[in-house]
Length: 196
Image (tube, rainbow, N blue to C red; front, top):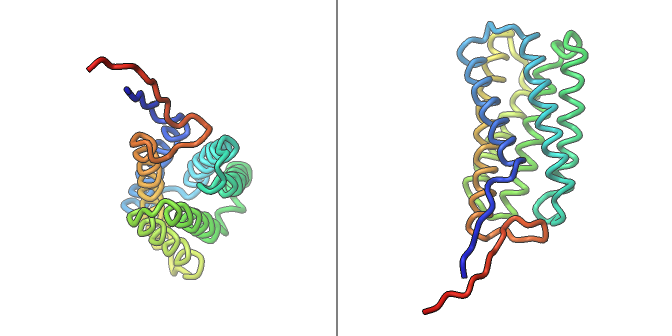
C-alpha cells in the first residue's frame, strides 16, 4: 500500500499568508506606532476581507461540522463585513478601531480555542487563549495615547498571526499524517499491490 498525500489546500496557503501579513503588520505597528492609522484601516480592511472570504469558503467546503464548518462561516462573514467597513468608512472606523479589533481578535481566539479543544492540541489551546485575552484587553482598556493603543494592537496582531499560523500548521500536519479523514478528500490514497 502506498499513500499519496495531497499538498496543502489552497485555503491553508491563504491562511498562512494571512498569518504572515498579520504578524508583519503587528511588528511594524508595535515597533513604529506612528504609522498612519488610516493606512492601517485600509491594510486591515483588505486582510480582514480576504481572511473572511477564505474562512467562508473553508466553512462551506467543510462537511464535517465537528471541526468547525459553521464557526468558520460565521467568523468569515463577520471578518468580511468588518473588512468592508474598514475599506469603505475609514474615518468612522478610526474612532472605534481599537474596540473593533479587540472584538475580532477575541472572536478569533474563542473559535480557535473551540477547534483546539476538539483536536486536543495543547499548543493550539494556549495560543488561542492568549489571542482571546489580548482581544479582551484591547476591548476593555482605555488607552491614554494613540501610540500606546497602536503598540498594543500591533502586539495583539502578532499574537493573532502566530495563532492562525499554528492552527493552520497543526491542521495541515494532521491531514498529512492521516489523522483528518473525511468525505472531502483531505487525503488521497493510492493502493498498489506490492510483491514481497
